Length: 144
Image (cartoon, rainbow, N blue to C red):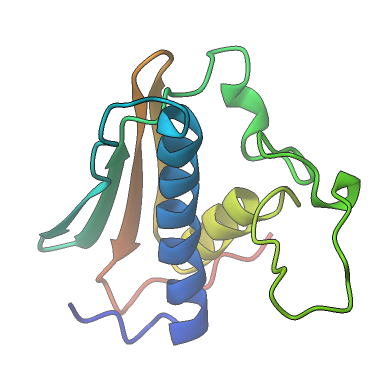
């Protein structure tokens, strides 16, 4: 995968965010059940124009009423980490969800570099996230 146009830390953040969200959704859905949690599936498709990373889960999905909000900063389906009673003095408590910036900033990075991030969800089943990363090295910087 030739994504030398992408800053490695930005690419890492985008993929990490999608995988983290899927793992959290599956864990929350199957935490109290006797069933074995289904795997999160990751597919990388190497096209001529794009490299697309698809992250699929069976974490229950997102209600259609919530879909317009997922790319809004400060919106999260996770519990607010500031509401938790963590002992801030210990290094073991690291909150990685609930701040509401992961998906919006991931889509912003993807679009800035000529790609896109799309989320398709089925409430009651799961979510598919498609991270399209442009291969074309001649695209212009998208300035307003």
